[in-house]
Image (cartoon, rainbow, N blue to C red; front, side, top):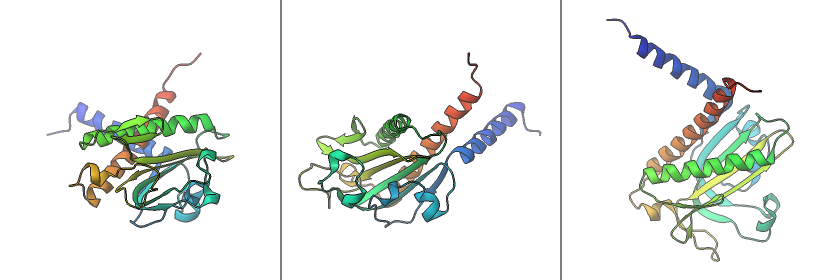
Length: 214
């Protein structure tokens, strides 16, 4: 019994999507434990530390303690930005030259909305305020977007617990929102978010390539 034309078409479409994803976004999940200290937001970090060339999204579970010299947002200067355990996402885009800070902020907001949707899929209802997510009055996430001459960088992270977070900020963690959540569940969540983001960027590139312009 041969393979029907519809199945062949589906297989071809999947191959096309896979090829696009590989071209536009490389994805990597690191071992648990890496401290986010702000240095990871520097341009070319994924290439210099991990050997990843091109646009990428890297995720891992680990603590956060940002050195004052690594702060990006001027409003954060002098503030304590720490957490005992978070799930981190570091994104770098090279597809716009020169790098565009406005585009970077657009993509940051896109990521935050996709994270919000993914959390709702596992029963955690979050509220978005700009580039931050909240559950109740507790701040669930941190995020920053910035640019170098050649690339756009985004860091986004979700608290797993409120332990180790600043005393002057009401925070909440994923494990407090969903006590049954395991580290395996969190890894699957982060990989699912990474896949969705990479596919969204790839889909936009595909749409651009087939759009008539004037």
